[in-house]
Image 1 (cartoon, rainbow, N blue to C red):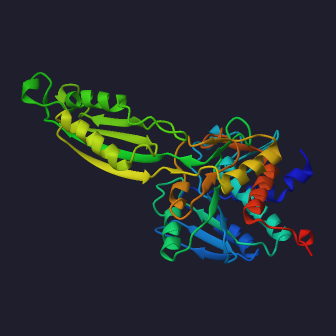
Image 2 (spheres, helix red, strand yellow; image 1 turned 60 degrees about the vertical axis):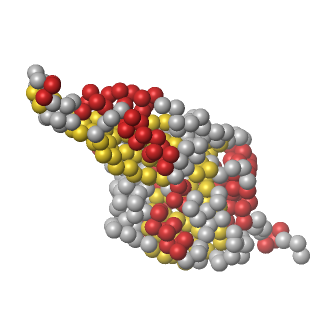
Image 3 (cartoon, helix red, strand yellow; image 1 turned 120 degrees about the vertical axis):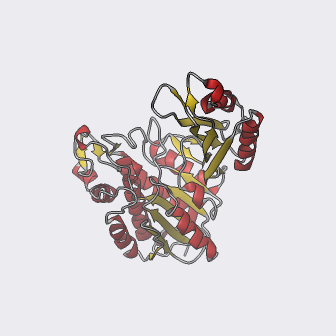
Length: 390
């Protein structure tokens, strides 16, 4: 392994971040490290901590446009440590890969965009516009006290972002092959179907909620909610949990609980999905109550300055033309889109995220850093001092 590669600023910072066991929502010292690096560049640092969650907004400059990098320092639990080939919070380089919890999601991309900003500021100390950095420790958790709180605070004082790069691991089979230019919405439900408990030998004296629910659930999962559009696949509904019964095989349950989720395209709204679902249950005559939770609305960034800058940078560095995708789960981009018209995600290969032996190719880290730097330079239209017209 090239010593120069292991000494690359983004690699060195990634090692420091992975060594901090920042299990959501604990930032485990990551914020102090990153704040120090940003403050040294002239960023103004603000904290918007909420209910045990750490949130940071940093900005360099006061002019527009505001170009932001966003991400999270928290990671998911590693699971049994003996399932890992090396300790999850001991960053380990072997056979060309950097291993550790958060290596791909997302401590390496965080390190890459910090290093990219450092390089950019050294090249363009008087750059036009402003650079923003938004960080949270509550992306992998319930995500109710994290990025959304920073967005609310910025919105309340009229501060907006013009373009945001979220450092999610977006690449699939090959580094640079995919960037996310949007995400589907997420709408979850907890359904309680009421019956009447009784003995299985006397069904006429009871009312089985499972039997009442079964045809309605069949129709629910078979329904075509929409056909999607040019950017989004059709809306889907998936049942994740069903609970009923006392544990005895001779008791008809008195209630059945079902958890299900919609991942929805803009072709449907949360309100229309709720209304159609409840109409379906009413048509089947269910005795029910339902609790809805909207985790995020869909967002989309069509081709424009941000997408063009990202595609150009990725193509220049990797030789690959990235595909635009809205697949996968949700990200904090759903919150940022409330104050930013252009939000997109790009980062390393996501094949090992949330898995044991999570890793990222070491050689991809300097490439990612260079891509982020190029995106920033393109969007701010900066010039080196010695390249300006006299």
